[in-house]
Length: 472
Ligand code: AMP
Ligand code: ZN
Image (tube, rainbow, N blue to C red; front, top):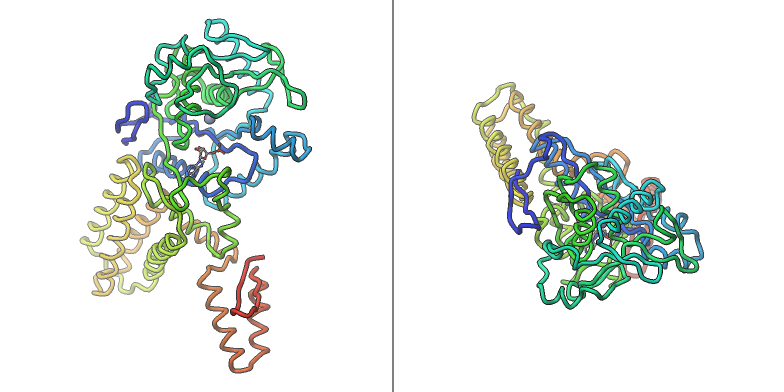
C-alpha cells in the first residue's frame, strides 16, 4: 500500500507500526453549522482510505474523528443564538451523524467531543508538559507556544525561515491565520466574560483549537507516533503544523508517521465554504431530487489529491455510471445455461487485480473505476455472445461485491431503493405518465399518480411552466 505523505512530499509504502491495526486520526467538523458537501468530500475520501486499508490491504483500523465543539466559531454562534454551547453544537453533531449514514460512511471507532471532561483534562496535561519543558509563556492569563523553542517548527508546511523569524516572539490568539503570519500560537485562552471556562490544573480558560486535536489523538489512540493523521488540505497550516509542535514537544516523539491531505471541492472554481456562502448540504442535494449515492460516487471518482469542481452535469454523469454498474448486475440474473468458462474467471481475476493495484497506489479511484467499467464492457459482450453461464455468475458477483466494499455506492443504492426512495428518473417517469393521463382527460388516473407519489414522499406542484416536484 502506497500513500502520498505530505511531510515528505513523496509517495511512501505504508503499513501500521504493529503490522495489524492502523491507528488513525482525522480532524472532524467544527460544529457551528451543518457540514456542506465540501466537508463531506473530505469525509468520503477518508472513508475510501479506511475501506482500502481494510478490504484491499487487509489491515484493521482504529479511526478517531473528533468534533470541534469549542472554538472561536462555535462560541460566537452559541452567543448569537443565546444558547448554552453544548445545546447549540448538539444539533450539528446529530446532523453530521445523519449525513454520514446517508452517504454510507462506515462509522468511526471514536467520535470524541473536545469538551468531554477527559479530553479537557488531557489538554491540560499536555499544556502542563509543554510548560514544564520550557516551550511556553504566559501573557494576560493565556498560555502560548513559543515557536522559537522548536528548531523543526514549519517542517510540514515548509515555512521559509525568514518569515518564521519575523513571526517568532509575536503572538496570535485566533485559531486560524495565514502561513505568512507564523507566530507564537495560543494553547490555552484566558477566560472571557460569556465564554465557557475550565481549569484542568493550568488556570482557568478554554483550549485553543490546535491543542484539542493533539490531546484527543494521543488520548484515544495511545502512544506517539500514531500511524496516520488526515484532514482537508487547508489544515496543513497552521492547524497540523501546530499539532505536530505541541505533540512532539510534549512527548519527545514523532507525532504521526503518515500525513494525508484531501483536496478541496470547488464551486465555480472557488473553495466551497461556509464563509463564502457557496455551499450545498446533503439535504439540499437530496431536496433537488438527487440521491446520496450519486453524490458519493461523484465525490470519490476524482483523485483525492486533485481539486474537484462541483457541477450538476457531473452529478448526471455519476448517475449514469452507477446505472451502468447496477444494470449489469441485474443482467446477471438473466444469464442462462449452467456452464462456466475459465476465460471469464481469468478476465474477472485480472480486473480484480487491477482494481486492487490502483487503490493500493495512493487511492487511484479513477483507474480503479476504469477497471470496473472495462470489465462491465467485456462481460456485456461475452453475455451477448452467450459465453457466460450460471457457473460464472458467483465469481463475477463476488468481484463486484469486493469493488463495492471499497467504493460503497451500489450497496448504498440498494439501501436507498429498499427504503422506498425514488430516483429522479423514477419521479420523471411518474410525471410523464400523469401528463399523458391529463392529456386524455383521465383526471382520476392523474390524481391517482399524484397520490401514489405523495405516499412515496414526493410532492408535485403544477405551475405555469409545467409540473415541479420536491421531496417531503
Ligand atoms: P471544518 O468544519 O471547517 O473544521 O472542516 C471539516 C473538514 O472539512 C476539514 O478537514 C476541512 O479541511 C474540510 N473541508 C472544508 N472545506 C472543504 C472543501 N471545500 N472541500 C473539501 N474539504 C473541505
Ligand atoms: Zn484537528
